[in-house]
Image (cartoon, rainbow, N blue to C red; front, side):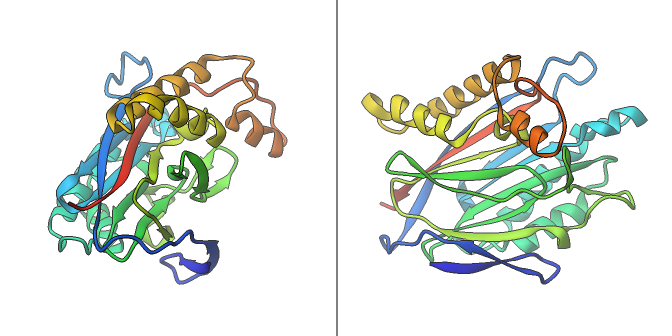
Length: 274
């Protein structure tokens, strides 16, 4: 089925939606892992995330490292943004979280200097996963242990993602893309910052899911740990032809290996609501 994903500035873009009728209600069981890169000046790193189980909403943000040249820790912006997004989500009706409103409220309430990407996802009871994204954080969907969907990214140019922030050069929530994708029980959602997406191809995550769930079934916490650990390993591999290296080549740049970065992974398992 082809539907439209709408940017908040009104522009429409086509996307493929995987929709099959599911049970009357579904829920997400979630687990997460954050691996900040080794930096004595910023021990908390520049990523942030939240899981709001009550409202079935999850989110990640990645503070833009370029602010360090101005003495600004963009991680503080990302952490405030995600905290404010969690607070805004908690005020939304159960099963009907409006992500446009959540992101807008979080943005207005974030006063720290800096900027960050963001991707917030919620499960609604219309058989759809809804998402709102700015920049190069995003999510993938795996069905029957096979990769079926990856959210688009937004970049001004190579390695320069769109980013929310308070400066005149930063983007505003109207730059976000809204997405909805049909889900069914058993689907696995992998949400992450570019520390994940630049260092792992969907096929690698698919392999991890197949191996990790073969004997134990789906354990979101363990799956997030395993995926994050492999992304970390790839980031230090100087000879790995990573997604980041591939993107660099397409942009006419030279890069070998992975990309050392903060890594955030949230895994959500779609289950029938019992």
